[in-house]
Amino acid sequence: MKIFIDTANVKEIKEVYEMGVLGGVTTNPSIIAKEGKVFEDAVKEITEIVGNDCLIFAEVISLEADGMVKEAKELSKIHPNIIIKIPMCKEGLKAVSRLKGTGIKTTCTLVFSAAQALLAARAGASYVAPFMGRLDDIGSDGLILISDIADIFAMHDIKTEIIVASTRGPMHIIDAAKAGADIATVPYKVIMQMCEHPLTTNGLAKFMKDWESVPKK
Ligand code: G3P
Image 1 (cartoon, rainbow, N blue to C red):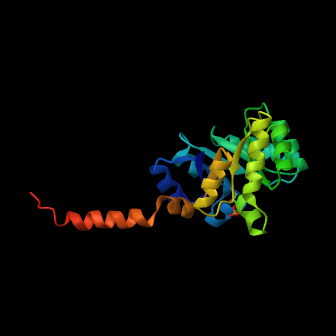
Image 2 (image 1 turned 60 degrees about the horizontal axis):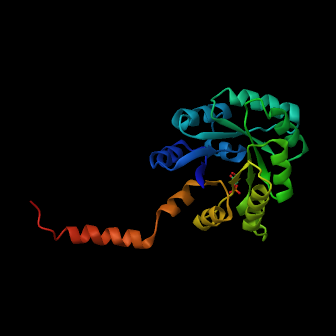
Image 3 (image 1 turned 90 degrees about the vertical axis):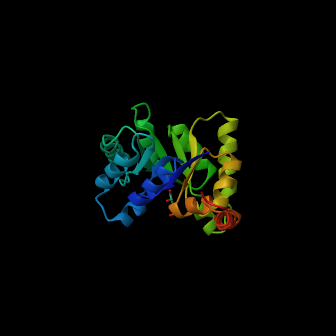
């Protein structure tokens, strides 16, 4: 399972990119709003950092298909590795379908049911983004959704990739990987949590302490 970062923060993107684990950067209107930058400028800045090695996901804000397609065409001019995020709804499916075969790849986002994921895949989305954490937040089991979509796509040989979004902690990532997701998009804080283990921290501290007693040249 590939790891993407779910942020538009340049410092966070740079650090995780340097760690060599990054396959993509996902944004949405809320994530872009946090950075206080013009949308297109924020996306361009990300492409300048990771564009050669990573996919960069930018979301349309129109609510009807014509506007979504127009925005998708404009955004995709920024960089060849831009993938367009389109919200799951009737108009979104129309836009996904119209963009299929144009060379512009789409992600159907805000997916909360396997039925939505199946429609998105059939409309021609390259990726679907089920929101695991937000389902857990309302007392529903996000993992069941990931597992259902993975099973359905495997059973029917559907090539659309599953990007698990709205991830809240390291166990979400491991559970999603075991359920068969292709990608998890992960907040910076959770990537750092994935790096850490108390036995690693304590073990390293002991190595450093013991090293002090080693005779030096
Ligand atoms: O990629 C979608 C994701 O950013 C949503 O996460 O934490 O707002 O539910 P969250």
